Image (tube, rainbow, N blue to C red):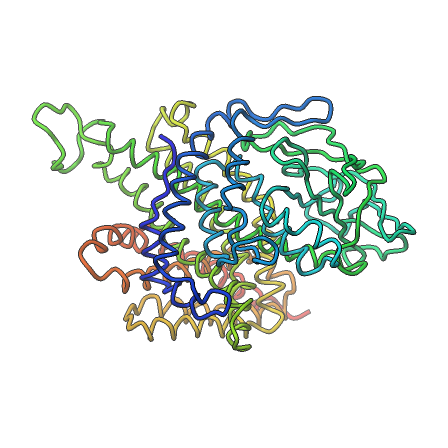
Length: 577
């Protein structure tokens, strides 16, 4: 069974829960955007992805990419599908009209990306960095670079890479050794080796725009000495640049995406942004990528859930503890879906998918607000949400994407462990999302050490108060969600105080703190869903995962909260030095 997008779920969350089209309609660039246009775009995107992209998922995994003397051939059908994808305008949804884009909200691009991940994550790796590369160049590139490269990136006719990692420098970018030297004509020449470069070489697009982290001569050591350059596969005169793919990795999953080891031999490049400020420019791309990786986790989990739910509704095994209505007079066994253990797995994963969608879509919506709202205070609040919540979503959604897909495999029993079911591919494909674009441990440290504690938790406290006020404004009386918000505020203050006594404490509890934040946000999201699901049809769809969230997911909150509290108490009990 190929993955099929279900736009009705997105419409409910966008319209009933988030009021997205009304909020976006109030922003100057989206004055003509409304719910009917949003619905039409979702229907068309879902149809294209379900009919063109999803059927290539299995061949992408089984055939994989082929490497031959520096050239990479993608799986059968990928090149034609990608051409149809960009020519239909899907990469250009949120790019600016002056660059050839459609000028639509980034929120729509986020949903399309989620569906692409669910349908065929190997394929989605190719356009996955386009939006981030486009934004990075638009904000930091000079006029000449923007004129030549932005329209091609906006349309998706040319693809892009993010060349950060080196063999000796994985997460520690301060150790990057790739060097670039200035030339008399204003260009640079860059030399070095990069590994784990998604789409470093392929046959999907005629040109590939590489954004390369490097050092200029006499640059200071460490991350503050890094610069960012643009090095295209093909130079403006059409000649091949000195950029070589030396190999592609044999990976656990994502076989449809070439992960390349790249060598740059005095390749021609141009500086993006200011010298030694490459990380600032690159973070525009990385922050965009991290939200998209969170959506990958949701998409892959939804794909696994669709397969498991369909299988559970047709496979009969043993007798259920209560006689189900679906049992016929000649049935020797009951449907798997009637067994409580399997029902728990399916409903729990549905609860994660639905709640996480509310949070990721809200984040994508607030990226549009932070960029376009006329009120400075509103923009600042939106930016605070995005800065604090993006690492939470990246870590929590990808962890659940992998673990939840593994749970869905369990529904199949032994049939899930063989290739025929297709669910084992999802488990393999999902695992890397916990690693790339900053490992989940780094996301937790980024959240607590770099974003929450520097102001003593004030920013996080303001965000939690805003969420409390939104619940009250929506007439929600979910005292449990309100209590979790208050507990997280108190916990944040406790960690801030304990960290003064033990500077290593935040690094120890960061993962548990991030989980507390995510579960608090999920409680808030489900409280909002409960208010929105007011009629009988909505209740039939949303009440079951709502109950599963409170019964099977939310209890983790108290466990994680207690773990962080005990670590803080241990600090306070230590004798003074």
